[in-house]
Length: 110
Length: 118
Image 1: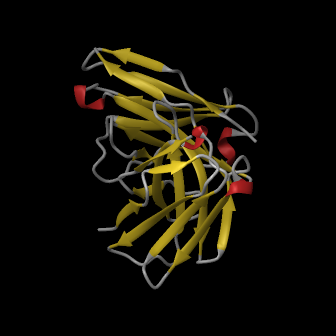
Image 2: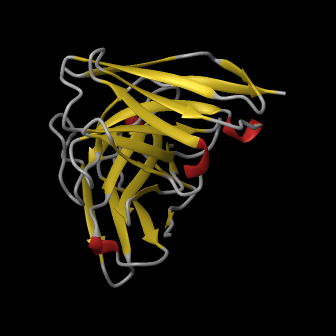
């Protein structure tokens, strides 16, 4: 099976931009959709990006997703960072009847 | 608005079986991928498995030998059983919904903490 590896943590000041990577260990990142979840402490995850780059209604356009086949990775970018964006973020994808979550990234707003 | 709610014992003994139920309200339990996901304290998310169309199941290969997911359409509920428990099974267990096989999980329960004691 495959793994999705994310940086353990990223931090940035309010108003700035952060990008979180999600690298697939084997198989092609583009072979299945990548989804992204935000999880605040004590709460269930919620979707911020689905199907690589789609935003659910209610998610601000400061959140965007992309796929880079050359690095076999997906990315979540948060622009105009706000204190409310401080949370854990997980990528998720699928292959061979198995759903896999990324290792998770803690975003800290300085 | 679809809502999911987990229920079950918060403390179970090592080597025994964990049983959790997820009650779905605001929508039918038919035709979706009803899923269990868990998160050990301070760690990441792990997909456990799903049930689809009341009988088709798929499980995480690492847990497959110990996991059973079933559905009770008359009660709009689906359930999880995990046998031969160890401390490593201590986690918050979430139920969630997927609209189709490769979709994201669009609705989640609030989560239920299950502690495995020796």
